Length: 249
Image 1 (tube, rainbow, N blue to C red):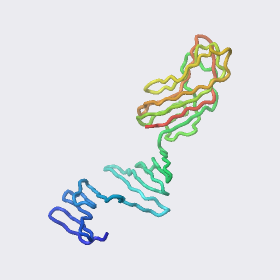
Image 2: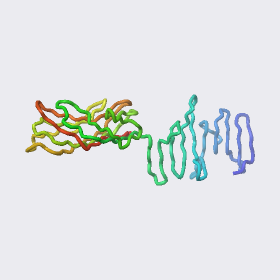
Image 3: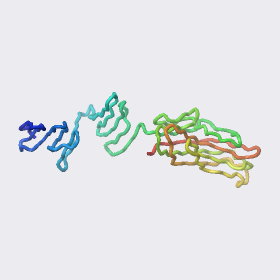
Image 4: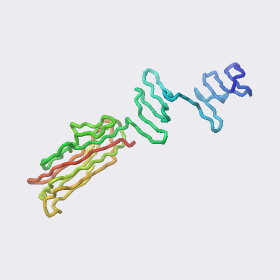
């Protein structure tokens, strides 16, 4: 479209095309209309069917992006494209969300972790809740897991999927029961109780797992815990386990 005329009436400024149809209007309230002479918002674009609202194009060595800036802040979140991928970045220019050319979605900052055990926990104390020592990270995408306290801390309020697996070794038949649970700041989730008296003798191995979809507030914590209930001597070893979780929504 070629611009044929720029004009102004008593209130508005208009740029028209060769057909004398309004192309751009700036009204008395400084609202800008593109394709409409009556803009309803600070920027009002009226499109014909099938048209794009805008096009940003870059060569293969650069990206094209749109930045958003609020008053009194130097941060500028962006929406952009690079190598046929669409991405969203936070105000400190860190990529938070990407959709690749095939539609795969990744969120590099989304809280997600998985930790394993580097050594067995042997002869655990009876009648005591023991935090399972998942002390080796496989990954910790938002740095929310502590390998010293074996604790996950929720970075934001939301719903979290939490999972664990642990193997019991050398279960004592005389123990009253063995119990595992996922404990968060909001509540405790019992996952499984094992009664060793149902076996004919001490048991060498017993796999145990649990999962929960938990509500957590920002700063809440979660651990996987084990308990041996007994009035006398009993023992059990823990080995070959993993603890994982991620923010769902």
